[in-house]
View: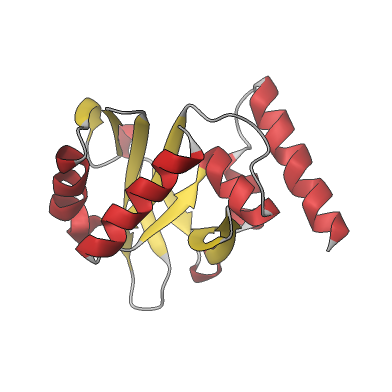
Amino acid sequence: MTIELVHVALDSFDRAGVAVWIGGGWGIDALVGRQTREHRDLDLMYRIEDDPQIREVLSAAGYVAETDWWPVRVEFRGPSYVDVHPLDFAPDGSATQAGLDGARFEYPASAFVHGTIDGRRVGCLSAEQQRLFHSGYELREIDHADLAALASALLER
């Protein structure tokens, strides 16, 4: 997923009036304020009630659902890959994401922050939420690199 395709996707969601928050590697890069590595995909969290618009925007951009584990996540393949994660928001701004086998992932309201990608202010997941998502499984080399970039950027601030 190139930075240009990230901008195209975000522009499309902006035009459709759909709020998204970036997670995964691009989400860490948003917190760091620069691209730290190449990315296979763009991970997006969104309000579950916006699912029809999310699918419509991605379809219009040439994406098709490749892995559909609704309501857990859906991976779209097209010009690149976009992995979407629907969230059920509570009135207090917190959210819940369905997981496999009945699991639930909790997002406190403080998990939704802003970062910067290529000078553009974007919604993204907080450093705390990113660290939480990088726990409970064996980390890959890119996960270690992401966490190191995040830790380094936070120390510089």
